Image 1 (cartoon, one colour):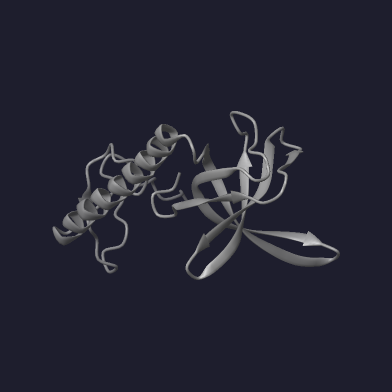
Image 2 (cartoon, rainbow, N blue to C red):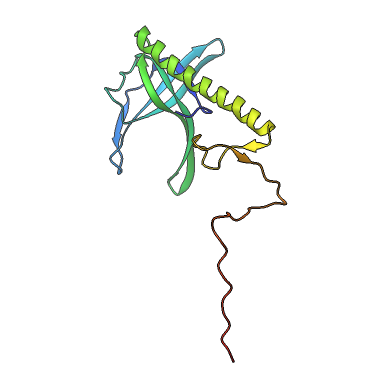
Length: 167
C-alpha cells in the first residue's frame, strides 16, 4: 500500500465479480462498488489481485482499502484508459472488527507517511538529504550544489592515462 496514494471506499458491490487468470499466473477479481452520499451515487471500479478468500457477492456492503491507479491498454486499435481502485483489503462492512482493523492499517500508513514527511523537512532544513535509495538504513549525506557535481570516491583512484606507443 502506498503511503501517498490511499483510497478507502464503503459501498455496495453492484455486479457479480469477474475472476480472470492473467498470463503471469496472477488472479484478478474485478467488480464495481457504488458509494452514496449527499451528492448522489458514484460507481467505482475495483481490481483485487490474488484475493485471499472468496470475492464478495453482488449486493454485499463492503469496505475497500487500496490505491488509485490509471492503466492504459489497446482495444480495437485505439489506446484506452481506465481509472480504478486496486484493493489491498476488501472486508464485509457488517464485520466491525475487520473494518476497524483495515482502517487502523490505513491510518498507520498515513501516520508513517506524515512522520517521514516531517523528518524529510527537518533533514532538508539542516542541509542534508536522504540517501538515493531511500532505504532509511543509511545516514543522510551532505547536500551538494549543482556546481559541485558528483565527486569521485576517495577509495577509488582514477585509472592511469593510456600509454602512447614509442615511435
